[in-house]
Structures are given as structure tokens and as C-alpha cells.
Amino acid sequence: MIIWKKRGVFLGLVVLLAVGMCLLVGCGGNSSHMAAGTAEDPIIVKFSHVTSPDSPKGAAAQRYADLVAERTEGRVKVEVYPSSQLYGDKEELEALMAGNVHIIAPTAAKMLGLVPAFQIFDLPFLFVNKEVCYQAFDGEVGQKLFKQLEPHGIIGLAFWENGFKHFGNNKRVLKSPEDFKGLKFRIMAGKVLEAQFKAIDAAGAVVPFGETYTALQQGTVDGQENTWNNMETQKFYEVQPYLTQSNHGRLDYVILTNTTFWNGLPDDIRQIMDETMKEVTAWEREQAEALNNKSLEIIKASGKCQVYELTPEETKAFQDKMEPVWEEFEDVIGKDLIDGVKSLY
Image 1 (cartoon, rainbow, N blue to C red):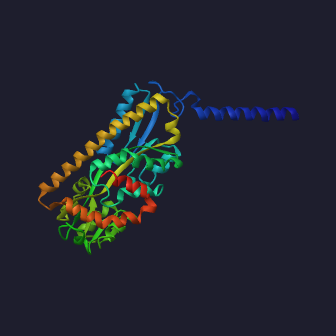
Image 2: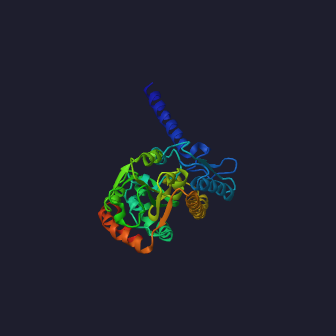
Image 3: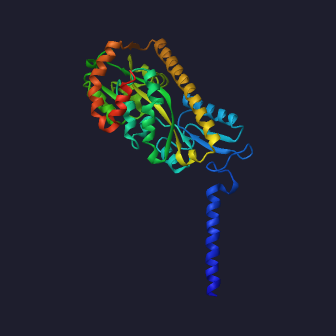
């Protein structure tokens, strides 16, 4: 009787081990980690993001899905979930780390709690033009940022563009640092953004994006900083007659994947997905730039405000004023990263 019980325990352990191994490899089912993927039983890749399908990010995500399906001959099916259908801003990073979703595209600002170095995109007047941005994204600066994600089980695939930020306000034309004195600007939460306005004797007030129009209209804040497309679609230009084309900060997206998922893909599939991501990244940047340019023309044609473009000399004056802010955050962001961007000028 005792021998029977021991054998039963042993057999039970064998069964449990077999079940566990079956779950690990997917029991021949649709496991995106281990299966080679076929047209009949494709590898499913969940791509979650929070913007609309017709935004540059939304359109690029769908383009990526279509191209991957075509180039893998149906062995991979990328399911795109836009507009927070699966996860919102606050949940998507945790979902990625848990393996509940495979690719996400949050704004770089959402990464600060995990990797503070991502605050580099908030440093005012550090990225002087789009060429410097792209070289930083695709070069050593971007790779160093991605490296800091690896201990968290995350791989960075690419940077997608949202665009440069510009200033708007309802008091006066902003041409020099002195013009900002005493003004209050709506900002997203962040120490760098607070320091940016403090350096030019202005103030920052954290206001939810959806409440910004009302805050401007009611005078709760005097101004805001945003991309042209955000200013146009949110009608901010209707309640602030002075806009300055300053290119002073960045709003961009970082495309991330789960390390276990990505490394578990068949080599040929991973290569196709990686190469397709590079191609779609270039396409997305073109779409984002075109959309911002279109929004700027709509704003100008409205007749509701004037747009002033900073001269190179005026931009340099702002850079000189902001260098102490860069130095203030060297220990948090990394002097090597900041110097890496400056070396691209």
C-alpha cells in the first residue's frame, strides 16, 4: 500500500511536469515564443497603442502589421489595438513587461519612472533640428537609452516622431528669454519642464491635456507648449494669439517589445520584423512631419493668431540660457547622453 502511494506521487509529479512543459512550449499550439508560425497557425503579435488609427502612429502601426504579414507570407499576424482598446497610458508598460502584449508605442515621457534618462527629450533647445534628432534616435544616444531598458525585460525597437514643441501664449510675442518673465505655462509633470521655465523667470503649472483649452481660455495659464498638430486639432490657437516657432523640445514615441517574446521568435521572422520596423519608422517620420506642416498652415490661414519664427541668433540666446538646465540634470540623464547629442551639431 505504501509502495502504491509512492508510485502514485511519482506518477503525479511526472504528469505535472509534462503539463508544465506542454504549457511552456505551447503544446503545439499558437505560441509566439516557440512556434515557427505557419499561414494556418500564425504567430500572434499584439501591438497596443493609445492614439487613433488615422494618426501617424496609428497609420504606421497598421502599415507595419500589413507589411509583416506580407513578408512572412502569413506566418505572423500583427493585431493592432489603437485608441487604448487594450491598455491605456498607465497600464501598457506593465502589460508589456508581463507579456500580455508584445509591442507598445508610448511617448518617451512615459518612460521616466523606469529610466530617468528618457528626460533628455525634455531638455530645452538641446535638439536643434530634425537631422540631429534622427541621428540621436538611430545612433549611439538611442542605443544607450535602449540599453537601460534591458534589465526590465524590454527591448527598444525604434523611435517614432510626434514632433517639435513650440510656445504659445496670450500676452505677447515671445522672441527672447526676457519675454517670458512672469508668464505661467501649462506643462506635463516633470522636473525638467519646471526647470525650463524657471530658467527664464516664468512658471509651469501641471494641467491635464484635455483641460488645456479651458485653462487658456479662462486665464488659469498664460500659455502652453506643444506640437503644431496638437495646437491645431485642440484649437489652442483660438485662445492664444501669439505663437512662436521655437523647436525647443520634443514629443516622440518609443517602440518597445518584450525581451522574452522577441528573443523567442524564429531568427528569420525576427529579422523580417526588425527590417520592416526600420522601414516603417522612416515612413512614420515623414507622415508626422507632413501632418505638423499642414497644421501650421491651417493655423496661419485662420487669421486668429500670428506665428513668429525664431532666428538662429535668437535660438542661440535661448540655448545659452538653458545650458544650466542641461547641467542640472547631468547626473539624472547622463552627461554622456547630453554630450552625445551636442556632438551632432
